Length: 297
Image 1 (cartoon, rainbow, N blue to C red):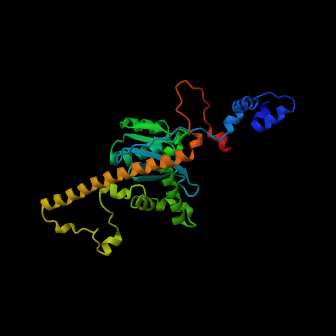
Image 2 (cartoon, helix red, strand yellow):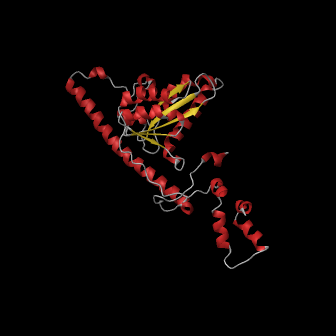
Image 3 (cartoon, helix red, strand yellow):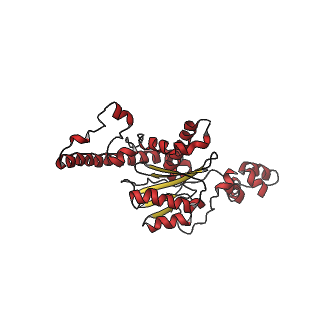
């Protein structure tokens, strides 16, 4: 029976019909097949609950972290931390990927620059283990470890990580081992690139203005401000106040666009997965723990 169950309800029904038969036999056969432990573990047809949009209304409120293994060069790993609101990234290349190394980098390069966060989201790997989690909690931030049932919660970080890695490969050409040489340059390119979901770049949302690059100075565009023409404190304060005023309006518009974009994305996926949606489970309901290794191996 167990072997038949793994082959599916149609196969089992046909086998039974050779020797047995009763009215409404398909229903108990279906129930038996659905109870097969091996089938449940191997099935990729997982039921889902309706998704909920992650609320992020201000910059540097929630940050997600991820790491990728890069086989070339001395530095074997790249770690990325990305703000969920603006998309602002911080990156680092590491020789060894340990929770201690990640914790030291994140504390010095993020927390010491931008302050404490409301929440830090990470995967459950050892590189985001106790040392990192303790460092995050010490700064008053909440740590959230993503579950394999809903990896999409880190989708923004994963997509950004892939884009960074692909760009590094293109920059390095045949000298793949020199990827760390281009890491800061590629990170800057990410920061000044406009994001489709909000209509602004992370740089604009962070500083309230477009970045001034070498080409802007050489061509004397409006971005290259002649600060020496500001002769009084009043003029300086007025200029900065206008910048700050514009930045807040920019962030407000970005928050609205980001919320709408995420809600539209959820509606789209809920429509696609309508046949798999189920009601939320009540406490005490017996379920199988999802093991991704069984699915992929």
